[in-house]
Amino acid sequence: MVKSVDGPVFKKIAEATTLLNTDAYVIGGFVRDLLLNRASKDLDIVTSGDGIEIATKTAELLKVKKVSVFKTYGTAMFMYNDWQVEFVGARKESYNTDSRNPLVFPGTIKDDQNRRDFTINAMAISLRKNDFGALIDPFHGVDDLNNKVIRTPLDPDITFTDDPLRMMRAIRFATQLKFQILPETLDAITRNASRINIITKERISEELNKIIMTEKPSIGFYLLDQTGLLGLIFPVFTNLKGAEYVNGKGHKDNFKHTLEVLDRIAPNTDNLWLRWAALLHDIAKPVTRRFDPLSGWTFHGHEFKGMKMIPSIFSELRLPLNEKMKYVQKMVLLHLRPIVLSEDVVTDSAVRRLLIDAGDDIDDLMTLCEADITSKNHAKVLRYMSNFEVVRTKLKEIEAKDNLRNWQPPVSGEIIMEVFALEPCRQVGVIKTAIREAILEGTIHNNFEEAFQLMLSEGSKLGLTVVKQHLK
Ligand code: ATP
Image (cartoon, rainbow, N blue to C red; front, side, top):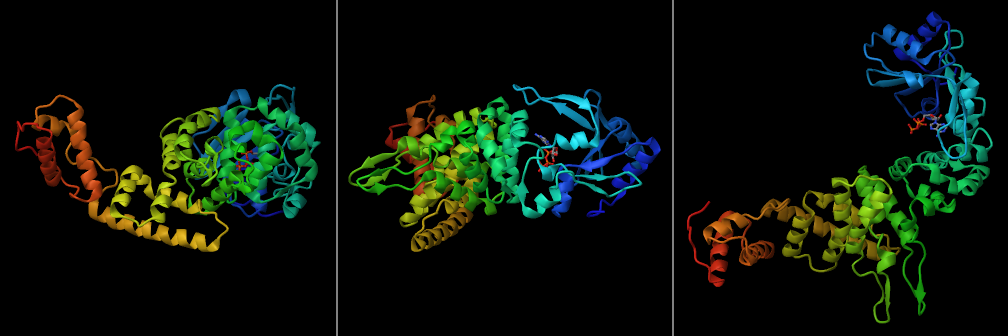
């Protein structure tokens, strides 16, 4: 008996196997995580009998009412408290070369283990009454867990040509678990990398996102790069690689820098999109790079150009083209602002401008900027960090005072038009800008009365006549 599989779900499955005179095993990720002491409530159960039948019987014994049955696939699943339990008949697979969808036949538990991707994912625990809890580990997955190794159960070339998504999965597991991919396995990934083109972009991005969400995503990115996968799935990102030299002057390698930023932001956020912003913050550096004999390397406008590149990157990777993308664009566009601001005297007006532009995302932006400080110069890092502290404090002070987050002009365009009996025209814009600037500069406060007075005086400067005096 390995680590215990205890609790009502397992007991009732065991009872069901006796009643139906069949077998059942918990298999795959749950077993791996159990042995790694990573609790999971996601169960995959295989049986050499009928998956639907055993699911229905177990549900009955557990008094679970709702069982979702997928007849075509011979699978069934139910929820029991927060356990998600999926049942399937054991199967054998046969692949052809241009699809990752195999032909599937009923098989034994051994067949089912053979079709698993890695030895650590191929272990099963019996839930039959007579050998309840016995570990079935034909490929020595336990040894690989102990040695922290990712290895395919069968010839890796076959495993990866059959289903090239497994190459991404290998790298994802290596990153999540901080395991080594066995050299032969890694070589096979490199050899078969081009097969990734039969995998849908959605599946690839799903794995990429899982890598991004790990504790140290750079592990995965370096492996993706080393095996050639990165250049195939995300070529614009590999353009960041390397440093060019002119007159002996180089710039930093933006590939390494970006991955360092991603690793540095990871402990501070579980927001996938903020992590994407870290990954893309310098994406336009290769296309904006110039060498100026006086000032050296420059990347003018890379934040703006980067923001513009994001829709095509998201679309290519089948990432959502919605407010999540807009958020990433905003972070990329603004990523230099707190740094620029902290390099100078931190004025109230600059802080107000930043608050208005970043809105509710200001804290995320600060988190990104702090992660972006990767200089090897310790004194420089300390200086930046302490300047950021000043910016953060100022942000709090000004926010409390001026209430500028998600700012709306206190006097709207409609009011301006009503007071001066105007149609939409240039003057309305001029007055609105004057009000906004005055608030940002601190010459008036962010309230209706002061903004209204300013509107009147700006209107008179423009030669406008007040038609309605008392508006609120
Ligand atoms: P996680 O839940 O962290 O994604 P997991 O291993 O549970 O990890 P699933 O995708 O749910 O991942 O897969 C469950 C099990 O199915 C795996 O442990 C493995 O045995 C098997 N499996 C999943 N995908 C593949 C694949 N592409 N090729 C072979 N076996 C696979």
